[in-house]
Length: 249
Image 1 (cartoon, rainbow, N blue to C red):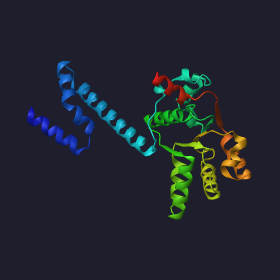
Image 2 (image 1 turned 180 degrees about the vertical axis):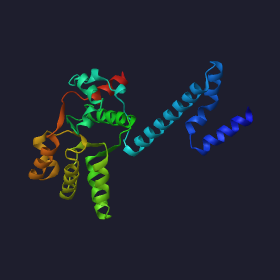
Image 3 (image 1 turned 60 degrees about the vertical axis):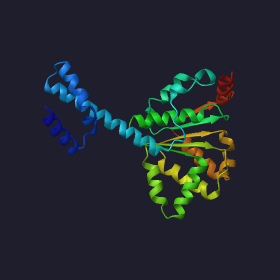
Image 4 (image 1 turned 90 degrees about the horizontal axis):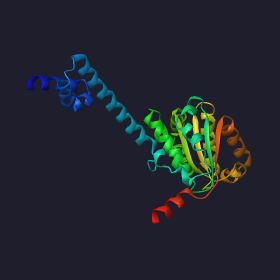
């Protein structure tokens, strides 16, 4: 029995099936205890391999997304954000908007939970096997300029174009240079009606000219973003401040 087990494990290693290897002894014991047949035993091993691969893929997607912190919707306290419709937010977690290449735009005051929720949606997308990239508007602008200087801009924009979900946080906190604005406009144009973008901003659309330092360019960006979009208003007391106050009590 021991020799047979070692032979099987070596074959599983050769076939690169780590999920089966890790669970082999546990599944074998369970199969013997429950008097399962060979087909049932094999199916249980296969289930473990599938689960292992899904977990590894999720971890890889999560790492590649570059979230500043990992947030889930379970840790968001909707009672501190009465200005939000919980049902509507939970509908976004179904990720149906990705199928329609819809954009999601959160506009509202600082500290109202915008970043938490877009991150939670991004994490959920990773769980579903979707590729995600997370940037602040400032970091994306800087990265685009860096790639342009390294003559790698086309390759980077192609990466941004192909990702399932592109998240741009904190649009409006920092004014963008003319070069950054032109490059970000290129990204929006490449993804127009081809892939979803999620954006958070503390400024209303009428103030976006201040972000891009170009009213015409701002109008063109807004036109592309809102053509097929869901826009949510985050207007209320700071979710972050309320949470801190509660923790200090």
